Image 1: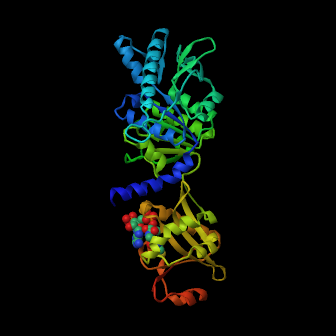
Image 2: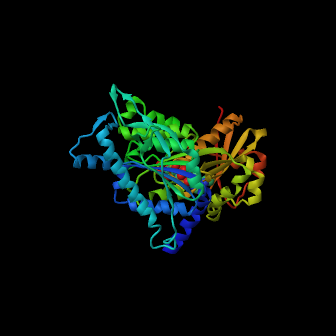
Image 3: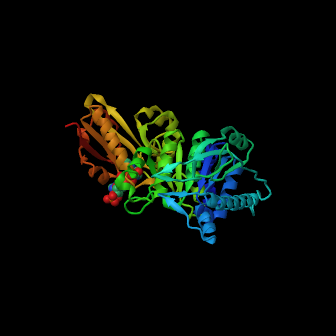
Length: 441
Ligand SMILES: CC(C)(COP(=O)(O)OP(=O)(O)OC[C@H]1O[C@@H](n2cnc3c(N)ncnc32)[C@H](O)[C@@H]1OP(=O)(O)O)[C@@H](O)C(=O)NCCC(=O)NCCS
């Protein structure tokens, strides 16, 4: 595919997401490590792009390595209690200095707009202020954490007003008290609390180490809250560092408090945020309360998706041609596997109740998702459905997929052993193999 075609395909693929994200609230937590990374300016420019698409952005940044650097220059050794820094009167000045530096850096980068693009002159407005009130963390494991604090409250209405005005809201990891004190807060906790208070559509946390990995080091793309909790069990927790475990725990909290999607993104991948937001599969780990992939009975809203999925297979002669009207007539027989609202696999189960036979037809997995056990998952649901319906036999006609079904326990049979109705409509020109599997035996 040439560059022009791939651009057109990408842009078309992104269109539904642009539509879905417009005017939605995204809260982003950016750790101090990410701020210090080489790709930070690209990330900020991607945020400017999101702002130009009318996505409401709240950015909460952290400054841990920046504080460490300043303290080191002053020959001050910071003390920690577990994962928490003990912020005394002397070190709060270094915290404020680090926060000021990073805040100015982000504002400067956002002021550049979108260089070398038609948006270069568009003015991006950044709002920040005393939007977060803090209180002392108190005593942790017997140690007074002094000016290390927790979120007490969030100026929800003010933040909402700024977002409505099209401004990016920039939140520092500081909390102010009614008595004029300044507390050093965790950016993860602030981002979580703000996402809950604003009922944000997404909470997005950047940090490579927070991406969940499977046993073979592969990125876990989706995880439910229930599954994520097992990662925080005493045994599994040994495999994640404390900050990542905290980010996961806070993500679960946000998710259980109604934030629909929590994304953990690797900042080291250039354009990771755009890929995560504008492609079906993304690149990070998505935490949701319900599974990302669902298998369910199809509805009329799935007709176009089913048609788009099976049409190329019909052209290749793998599936029998079905019109949109035919799919609509049979829609109650269809089962679909849906990822993020897109049909990525389907099958139909036609019932011959008199003979207690169910015919499995139109089995298809989108080419991008084949060999990932999607077909297996779909088949298992279908066999369970046929079992629940009291069918005694599953039947399938196939020209090119015989062995896939044989591995699932199907055997070849004669046309004469089919229900009469099926014998009469058998297409001798297609010459499909007839396979059956006895169930409920
Ligand atoms: C057949 C199909 C549904 C399988 O779905 P899938 O999600 O890719 O399959 P799974 O991941 O569950 O299983 C993958 C295994 O099936 C095998 N397989 C895939 N297509 C096959 C075929 N046509 N014949 C035999 N085996 C096949 C793969 O080689 C793989 O085996 P391996 O793990 O030993 O390497 C999918 O490939 C598809 O949509 N094909 C085109 C449409 C089609 O043939 N439909 C059936 C009409 S009757």
